[in-house]
Length: 65
Image (cartoon, rainbow, N blue to C red):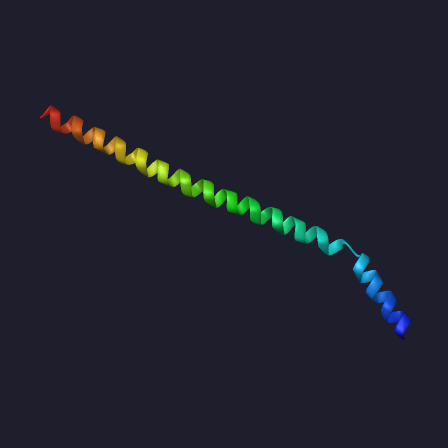
């Protein structure tokens, strides 16, 4: 019985099927984090650009009157 249990443990230690799943999960997590950071920075830049455009249009409208 001890020999059978030892063989099962050795086989489980050599099995690398689960390793691929962990590697893919880490890659997906890294890509997700990069996307969240990029979208956050882009949204800040877009809000700043929109504010600049509206201020420019407001000043054009005020000087035209």
